[in-house]
Length: 259
Image 1 (cartoon, rainbow, N blue to C red):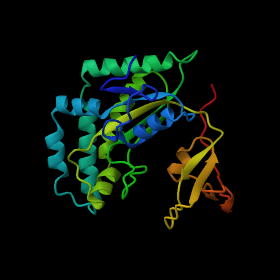
Image 2 (spheres, rainbow, N blue to C red):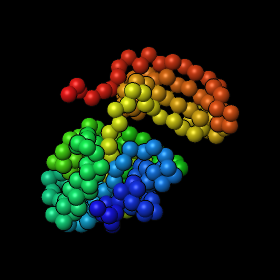
Image 3 (cartoon, rainbow, N blue to C red):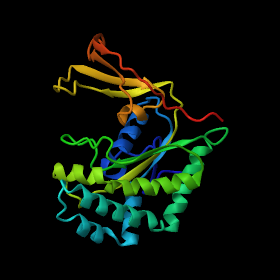
Image 4 (cartoon, rainbow, N blue to C red):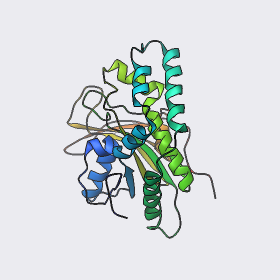
């Protein structure tokens, strides 16, 4: 299957456009093109989300629900968020779009001797901005097997554009809801022994001569969700020597169930 307006493979040869792939999707395509060891996958582009929303005819109603919300009134935000997400998850995906996604999933699975589990990861257009990272604001689902689970969780990623935490984050950072869109990454899972997050600066003071790494055992979900205290290591960006090191307790590890 070739990349198209609605599906873009990491190695499909198309330019990684932020408005089509979201922040995460664009980065994965860029790293794949640079020859980095990225697990294979594809992006369900923002064009598919936009087409779904247009077919459902609910965009105006969503904007009406979000208008005038007070970010401090968490009860009302929760109520609006639940209504929007339920509306999105209850709407059928147009058959032509659904078939494209199924074909992309089958094409990805054909690269392996047997079907492999995948991660379904949200990739919003308002993500990794200079003044707002949106880290952890939308949903990601791990170790999904089969096309039914994948297509259902793609829709749940779409709906996570309107989680309470994402709505409040946008309100507090003065990010308008108009023009927002969501791409979704479908990517082969990595059965990681160790994983984490690397930042090409010191996030405490903005020092760009440093690299900061937070890492723990297993898949990185427990690091990014704050469920464990990871190791924290700071390197000099030029010499790669260790500037500081703090070993966390790493009391838990996220691994797949034994087969």
